[in-house]
Image: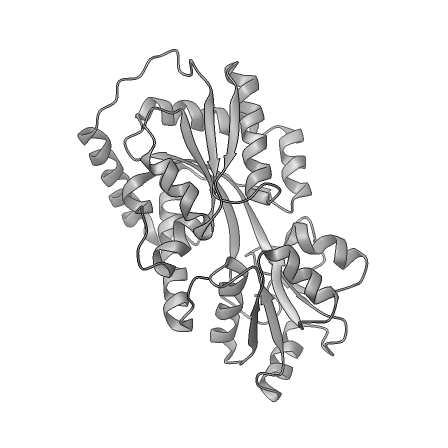
Length: 330
């Protein structure tokens, strides 16, 4: 991915910060780790992609380590409640965080006061998967491609409405990125989650949405909604016939959901290495890759240095989108 290469310097600074924090808060570890159950906190409700990936990780850890691993859902504040809980846990490897992009790279620009600082308080353990959003419209919208949608929106300002999973959610900010890059004006209709927004789209209550592959794919197959493009840099194997936004006439447009495992900044390096090695091993298994594919996600293969740079880049990107759009949290 060429996204993170220009930010290698930031990566080294961030990792140095992690190292400094860990040195300031030493924690002795046993070579026998783990010797008791592992808790994986998810800042979203059960049933979402983050939750499903966390449960897959928990199952694999249980099988590999012969110690139970369990998922604990702590939703609220855009994932911030669960993230803060993980940050405040002992840095001993027995409380981990499975997070999507929102709590890590969006919340710092969205919430004036957070109970945590992702760059200071967390260290990446493994980058697990990425997933694009899909730009979908109701069949009554008379466009067949992204250029047609832009032309219609420019010809009729504020006529089109777009739904999202809530103010400040990735679908909302992706639509704001779309607006800022095209200069179109549309009306935002927030819902409590991506699934309700797609239901509203199917029902014709809104005109378009950026939503996840997992939520939109069944409706796309049933032809209840029309898909125009995916927001990832490359085409998605889940919907290979759909062009990327860049291919559809918007070079430089990119918005991806991603999922990663984190620990506290003072987490000992031997535990980070142990967990990272284990995740890398079973991420190559066909059954794991197939499970991710059912959720419209693709396995990610990044070194920890690259993860740090990627996250820093994403933070800068979404902070700017939030500032430009004036987006606020629910």
